[in-house]
Length: 249
Ligand code: NAP
Image 1 (tube, rainbow, N blue to C red):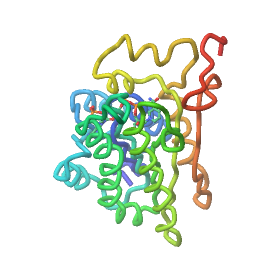
Image 2 (image 1 turned 30 degrees about the vertical axis):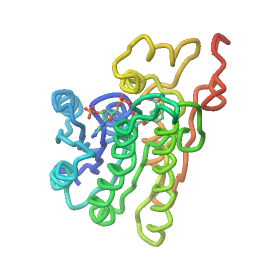
Image 3 (image 1 turned 180 degrees about the horizontal axis):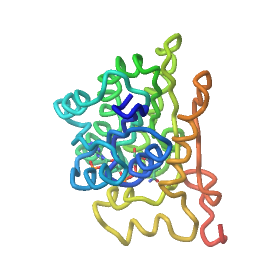
């Protein structure tokens, strides 16, 4: 508990998008939220807004993960592993090692490092791990191999945790969104705003707040209820590759 008696939540990748929306929604639901990411200026502004705590975190750097986790109290109630994203949309024939290495570091090893470090605190707090994976952890699409392979791995880690934690008071949930309009595509396309905007054209994409809703809902079920997986997509998106653009949806 925080000094004011609130449950404690950690949200990684909270400086933007889904992580920032989740931090706001969890604070509104009564959690004391510790937010982590690399852009500390954004994190500090968010922490001031929601009465939380900002701690710099780079999930690809083991020393940064260790310093971040040292700032978390002995009893942790909720860990939202959200940090991650995609770099590039190249076919395998043109795959860039550095893009793949970053995607595996951020989406898979980062998730493992933060989870491993915080598991004793989660057990002490009868806590809950919510991993933000993706429909890319369940489907594939041309150009997406590096990202889909990393998210398939994140789903495998999440499902493994559910088995390994059976018998312990720690819940495990996988939230798997489809198209959510955030900085995700601007990051994927290295700041090419025009290309990023096209991803969300001709349909109503999900918002970061829609995913925050899913996270808060899963986290606030009674303690005996484990929501294993939530797959959530815009109505216009039936799969990673089947999107009805221009249908007024
Ligand atoms: P976003 O707006 O680009 O946010 C990504 C967040 O991750 C930022 O706060 C970023 O903060 C943080 N981050 C990136 N690398 C990090 C690192 N090494 N250490 C710590 N934090 C790091 O994108 P988003 O859509 O909200 O993405 C959040 C999660 O949802 C990602 O795991 C993404 O793969 C997943 N997802 C997104 C979509 C979508 O359509 N948007 C769909 C399915 C799943 P800093 O740059 O400040 O570190």
